[in-house]
Length: 210
Image (cartoon, rainbow, N blue to C red; front, top):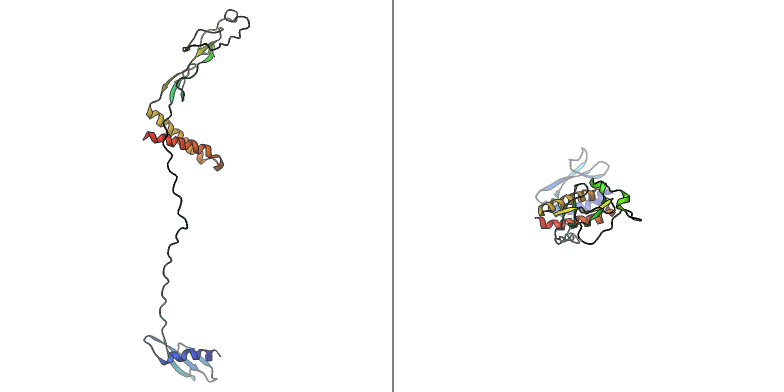
């Protein structure tokens, strides 16, 4: 049955033998069975050689064009405008001469016990009157670094401050930014907003340090 179906397909090919044709053997055995093969027929079989055209080589498919992005990536946000450098001061604490940094160059005076300054206290009976607690109240005028004792137990003192040079301010800002970036990297995403805002502010200020 299969041989009968293939025969009409092979008949037109037998009429013309193109260059580069392929030989196919048509075999009919003693029982009348028809077979087509690419080797000679077995003995006692009727053989007929058919020349079939060689199929053309397959044409490779053209390469696929790169997929175009449906939407271009959003442009990076513009840099934050530069902010002025903050004023920083190196201050010396009046009570122990220890340095610290501050954004206030003229700190408020504060009362400290005389014992902190190494000054002997006056007896309560001599220094404090009836109903006096011995704690001073700030008076008008500019206090000096050490004012006469009030009540014999406290006195007014004020820290001394001097502005930092520009290079020292920039170095301080860079150090703070490095610490903030490290902290942001170890912070959960939902807690980063205030830290990121502080870091962006420092970067805007550092634009004046180039």
